Length: 297
Image (cartoon, rainbow, N blue to C red; front, top):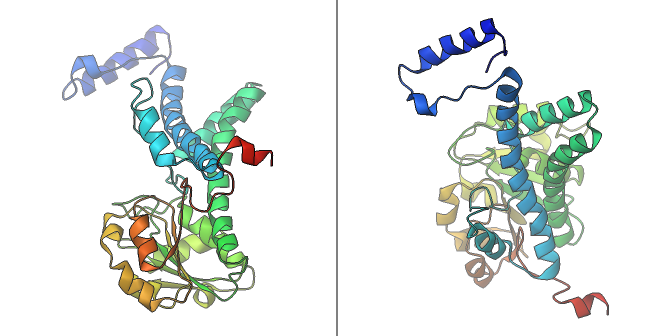
């Protein structure tokens, strides 16, 4: 992108000539400067919006008895919508989505576009709400008290196949659990203990007056992380988590044993057969209302 002046267009062409050495001309897009800037921000904002949209529906599914994966599958068949970025979860992370949305919000506010600013800011609010809601569900499910209870968080990276932890949902969920005096155990196949400890300090996830080593342990063995725990929470969609011997984990855990699937990657029926109490984002387990007549009862 460049200014719509003669010099600006010449600069754009110089850059096009550079990229044309390895990028086909039909794939090179030229725009004015603002269009270029906004295109990058809006692309990430639209992707994040889809995640927050399906996450908001996951809460409605839990209230009504719908299954968010069935809803995602159904609407994804509509070619106008498509199936990408419709996986409900504990929330998005990473360095780009939130940063770019907040940049968009700032621009809107700077130009006096209050309603537009509020619209995009709501995408971030829903993401924060989903993380808080997941942690609150854990606490309520475990009899409204987790003080002194060990909870194993499986996964700390913000998504699978990376060691990137920026804005990871795990650290925010852990913050809520620690505020209720839980003991948190963490396993991630790629993230080192030093990075996890850094993030707890950087994101101010530790309860005031408590040090990392007092309330958080980082394990290199997932079975060790689950040993003696009252609950397991799936925080990252690592493929290896699907292959674990959950019966072995169950036998080593405190009872009743809970699993909270924040990524919808596990076989919930099999886990229930083992003996776990299961909660999963957007799933109709233990729903109170299933039809409109019940709402008016």
